[in-house]
Image (cartoon, rainbow, N blue to C red):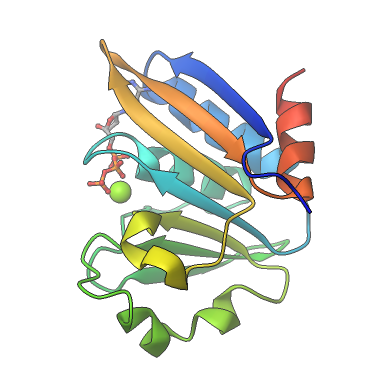
Length: 159
Ligand SMILES: Nc1ncnc2c1ncn2[C@@H]1O[C@H](COP(=O)(O)OP(=O)(O)OP(=O)(O)O)[C@@H](O)[C@H]1O
Ligand SMILES: [Mg+2]
């Protein structure tokens, strides 16, 4: 059994470009099997920016908006399918039942979940939890691993 947050990395991202670059790096290191990343942080902390960097690296060329009203946006990319959630407007975690979460969290998908805390206990633990916090003009980022796959990614990111 993996201990909660056995591995944790913290670093400072000075500007949007660095947040996009981190997203890109994460995309390169994510394993091909199903992998879930929870993104937490205040409004405007950079969750969508990070997701955009990741999606671009995987070949998505268009816009990336937080799917605030639809709750989830699907991207069928060359190597895999990415589901980008924004649960900010989820009023009751039970609403997740209607989304059919099991379908998303399977089939080697990559799931990015903004405002995952809104899902309460109904969301399974992620492989990685990324917290973004305002710090001066930039952002402090903490990445916590909650699975062996997540720990492996952190080790590779650590180099
Ligand atoms: N490391 C950084 N330093 C400073 N500004 C940043 C950094 N990363 C991203 N930003 C800027 O912060 C804003 C983040 O907006 P973004 O939509 O990504 O936030 P969000 O966390 O998804 O917000 P929401 O909770 O509303 O969905 C953008 O204007 C972006 O340019
Ligand atoms: Mg967002």
